[in-house]
Length: 283
Ligand code: PEP
Image (cartoon, rainbow, N blue to C red; front, side):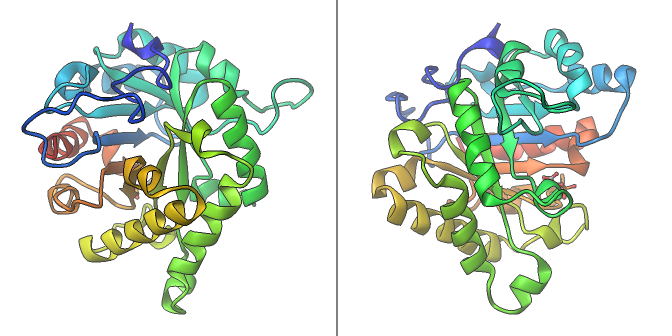
């Protein structure tokens, strides 16, 4: 099953090893669309939603292909896995900073991998701000994700107060530096960064394409300073924050925006399909 392919060694999902460049591809990076189901749905709804999602190109890395990943609540990962269509990948909403042991209630990265996950969200704002997760903790979670062979989807983004005081780019820069501390470029080949301004998440207030694109350039500038120009150009940077079926095309038409991390709209099959279709038009 493609859901068990190791993304770190799969050319379709690892830009570092993907040497095939489809002739008609206008943008170099393969689009990535994630559906973050958060703490929603029960088993019957989870199955119905999972069955409805298709990945253009079947996840095989060809033209029109999009990495489509769903992030169900932990209890439903094993429920979702067998009903996913070819190419649709499974992801965890979080992982522990510890490998294993006496950590009641936590879920280890190796467990996510074992149950069929290809990736894991790290540092979603609902965890940074709701649960006080720090960059130092997130750096350790990234280490666990990488050790387990999972693609880390690192979320960064400023609050409304930080944006209004002109500090958005400083916050993005410092979250990246803190969360990536201790990780070498060679280990981070599969990294995806999700720019998710806190004021746009679940609020219906979307960043303008210009504002999102500017923030994505900040992400790449920091990655270039931390690592290399080549690395900064390879990493997928996706936007999250009230992406929906109506605004996705405009956001995803921007060269800087390699895909989306979608909350509310990912719970509505037709809306999520429209967002995936918009991402597919990039490739
Ligand atoms: C998210 O969960 O990462 C998110 C961006 O949520 P929403 O699309 O609902 O704003």
